[in-house]
Image (tube, rainbow, N blue to C red; front, side, top):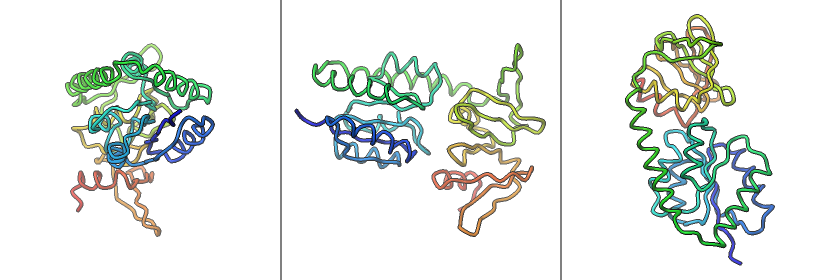
Length: 258
């Protein structure tokens, strides 16, 4: 019986290693590549043409869906996601399968069984499902574009919804599957990914400088290099926030730094 040639594409190295180790428990699956950079993943998937791809949704400067759009064919995709419940409903309808971080081993092995059954039966219609998923997401993105210029972010507190002016937001930090919004007055906790938040703030003076942080340019005091060449943003409240290599180029471009 032919091995199921598999690629893992996830920008989190530990997450990649975990999937790789779990796959080794099933001899049917052969890992032919692991990639932590989105654009490299596109190149290697097109070149190696695997049967199966475990694909993270969030990479710096590219999404998993952008990767799918750039591929020359459709392997089986297992989307690995921390998306909210609305996006998960879309996966239920259109995707082959998905894993929500943090997932349990039992859930992972259930996915592998589903892949084996699918390949054994050779069910038609998978390409059509991928096309419908991308069309759905494109429509959703177009709808989001109408609200990208929001000047206030709604945060529910008890039986009230606070409208937080974006001009008062100093920075936003990821905390698990929540976002901590730091304003001039206080901290708010919102069940929303910072990936979704930066889309809403795209046309305002904000930049994502790390997988887990967004900063408001109006509250940056200075940039600080460490003795080891690492770069931090020093905010007006003296908090230091690290700039990761993956976001540095885009951040500098928005600042006008060559």
